[in-house]
Picture 1 (cartoon, rainbow, N blue to C red):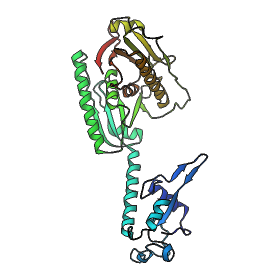
Picture 2: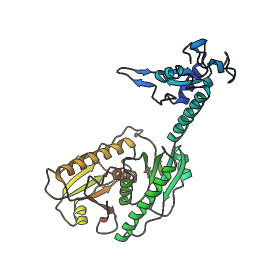
Picture 3: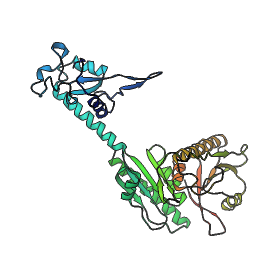
Picture 4: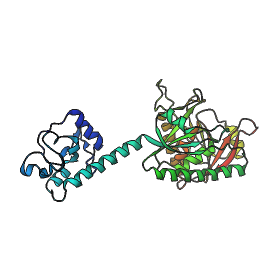
Length: 369
């Protein structure tokens, strides 16, 4: 392989970089490095059938066999993108790297890159909708979010039994549903999960806990005003909802209550009525003027999730509570993200509550995680 001047157009050069994914075709090393003040390229365009004569043209004797001549020797069909070390290794070990092997290496590498690029724009839809009986159509979702959905995993049976037995069954349904998610994801390595949820909050927190923060996901929030899923990372109007945390002043009780107030206010008397006691420490996560549709955008969601995780684990590490009671008033998607922040091996049992506005008791204990 030669390092002589190239008869390669700018467009073809860029095409070579794109098809190679900016990675060495042999060792997969990134070819653009971040230096202290600027980016540095260590990529080299390497000929398979060498250009030049003698030792400067490795494998040139095979040119006629592979249809290579002076007109096409600089074509991207005869070029591989490599780091300097691999380029040198292959050039000085001609017998170990004959043309067939190198053309096959180029083909496999570019197919691998193409597959990775395709998967970055593809996903598995996870549809968790247990409110009302109207299902979400995964095909319509694919059109709305402009992502190629490889598959869909769906749990859309309406939940109608809100007894303790009903909640426990719904918890088991979640666990079986999660097994289906993992099985489907295993069929498409590298793809992300796109989660669309409109279900009772305890089930979504539990689902998030099952998924955890070790799996790549995108959780969409539903905008009830527009009846569409919110796709933007930032509010186009520039408005932010910065959460704040109120912590107990030291440990006074063995029980910790956590309230998350985003879509509405959680009253203290409702909490006391739900847990049957006023003997608890309180961690409150809230935004100013909580109301419906306040939080829809990723940057706000991440702030709330980060604050919840940081303060909850800090408090429990210092105070070692026996149990935690979680009261949530917020959007469905954020509930999944809250669940993804919960690591059961690092926290005591957490009791989840469902809000209802029809009875005298506003919050009902459901399941624990």
